Image (cartoon, rainbow over all chains, first blue to last red; front, side, top):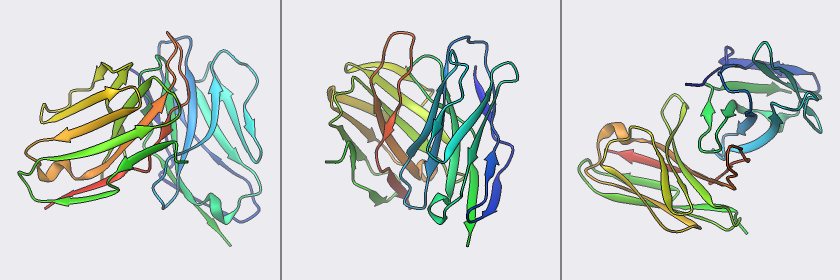
Length: 113
Length: 115
């Protein structure tokens, strides 16, 4: 069974600064996908970024980038130039089969003005 | 147009009642899911359907019965509601390829409160 661990229940950052959220996972699969989802107070689950395990290049989406270390089974999310609207719960998720997402416990990020 | 929609967004009911949550997606996806988010915000898969066929039933009590009338709809019916069923229920959809994973898109969630 796959497991996903987010060891930081809460984090805070000043507006315009950079913050990194950690995620580790455990799997015996060789091909899989990793995701970061954001859940603001509105409750909506929003895809932030996606990484295919077979790709060595780290995914980036504007101010969001990942550091994917396959051997270490680590998948951290870096948010640059943090904005107030980035305040949300962030979930790391794993999918190997295309039939389910396995989520971490979440990290509550607060961006302070 | 909303990609994945759920109704209702809020549901308050008494213990022992039966209720349904509806989900519709207009993305042309062939796979739909139900997830439960508990009070600690932990998200866990309940069911997934591919082309109207059940492919995952994650040890959910049989009081929960999903029904997929067509590829665009996946409804969740809950019988004999219990206090522990209080949670946020999310519907999601994706395009499933054999041995591969595609991004799942989520509905807005239904907050169920059982009194």
